[in-house]
Length: 501
Ligand SMILES: [Zn+2]
Image (cartoon, rainbow, N blue to C red):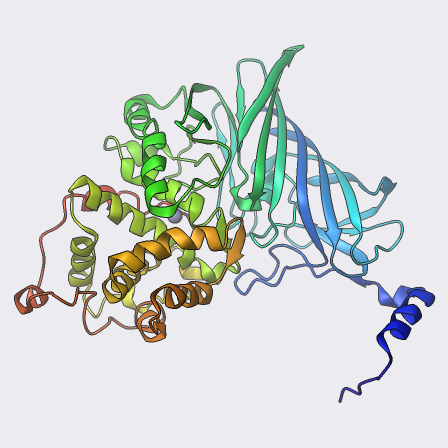
């Protein structure tokens, strides 16, 4: 029972001011931000606006030493708060004063400031830390790739805890300055613009700036020996690509794909609207994993993506994420379809544009080749569960949902939706339900039933996403021909790897 106290608001305000908050009014920030799949991801009680990371990394020993300066604002009266970090913190200061710090759980740092922090306060947290990222594992799993000449942080749904302390969830985005010192002859690659680099006493420091809100898992660090190419787009944005010197037979195919980044981004601007960030590029370290990741402004590609020759389709996928995933990010990890359904559909659109099979032909092919008994149809792209977050159904069935939408509302409204969405939620977060509402708003049509069929039912829909004008003969076709682009698109199916928590 809640009894309402009726107090004139001016009087209430003066009462609040007159009574100093007691210790009981300050409570610990939650050890998780409230994600439905990953309860300990991120933290409660504050919001970060900027990370300044000053790092030193020695490839020979895998030792990473860092000082992170985190600018944040408290969102409640805080007695203490958590940061996510897997490396060892030796000192934490809050607003200049030493704080008590305890490592708890798999990757939590509990920070008790010298004095409690009132809600709405801007705070500066400085964390000194060090460790060997490859030695930190969560349930046997690591986001850190040790390579023969360095190391790489690139993973989803999280990788930050392997190299910096953070509020590790896409819901808390921030700008980044990343400064990394590595032995001369080695490079350090991160997000955004390379502002400067300088060499002193055998070490070279690289200073990177990513000046638009960035989710922590989209921050990346790659240390190694790279061949670097640079350019500018027609709009003047800097392009920087980095290729490990050790790509062997895959080197040519990697360059023949990633050097087309500018061309692909220009085409995507026509579909999704203006490119949302301050730089472009990609990098290919000499890792043994097989996936790629949409790290902001500069996607990570595995050499294995290019083992069978050039693959522009994977570049299309990762660049599409710059709009769908990076600028507009999931609110909760269960919203993964707002990333992957669209990145996959962009590959279908590229295929359509290249004359290698239309999106409709690709949709028909997926629908026909996945029988009703295929467990593919039991995965619900709108809420796949943590174990199926990166299941192929999130991609292919997710793209089928978009083809169904296209047929329902027509090309004009469909492409207006694709272009309008990244503007509406630019540099923010959104849920699947937000997309459904937005598509209804643009088209003026009720769409709940359509999305329920394609995103939420654990069964194969009775009919494929055919255009209204489809001939009965076509609808009856059992197995349409495999579109020309199919194999290249299928070769990118391992674009993300699921991290077990
Ligand atoms: Zn993807």
